[in-house]
Image (tube, rainbow, N blue to C red; front, side):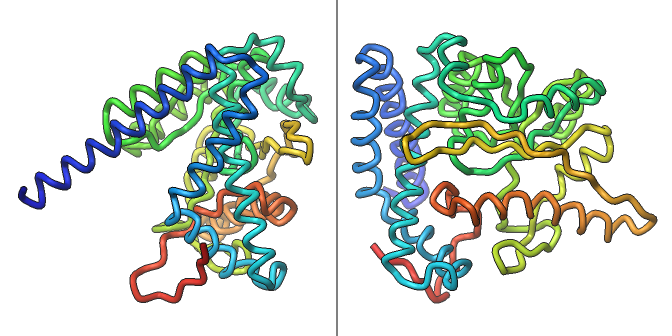
Length: 313
């Protein structure tokens, strides 16, 4: 088999496998009793942690590069990676379980702290940019706010494979969450601005520091941060509120709405952009430092071949 044909075949196999596993997970959440969901989450956690070694290694490497002073031993970093992995596998099961929950049930399960900040911002009729991260159970923010009665959209990098993208879109629609594809960028920005002008909440998750952007300090290192949230906020006048869904030791989830970010505006637009981007990145950093076991640790680029890696199994 030719290399191109082989790679296309492997590409299809990978996406079809992921699709059918996801369909099976969602279906099982529908017909199994609610009490079985923690067991499903536990199995998902153990199986994925065993099989997806490459992702574990990237998480170890990111921790070593950024928090070696706070977590000086391998055992401490391993504990954070293991807990972060558990957080995200449990988050996936919890999120898909919302497809089978009523709105009152969802509202009763998750408290919203400082919801008045959202209401006050929306009262200005310019929309709200909900600034979040791959942190805690961030995928539950949308379903919880929709259950509360808010119009909510989220910007997502959908899979390039059409069937997988359609499947995720369908699940979001069932939860009442509107999806704004992150690509193509110009079209995505137009949709974000349209939603904000309709006074909706639009969640942006800009904690990927991999390619181009505004150079800022994050976890003690320089990293390129996306400038989109700042430029869109300045263009539309939308309020920017950091929002984070935090998990406690008993697996209870609480949605925290932080105070609105205040941006600087001077004649030096480039410096304003750097300062304002640093401010939203700083909000993410504060949460990561408080709860390192709830961030994905996948926001940094994969180490290039030949770079030193500190990963461990």
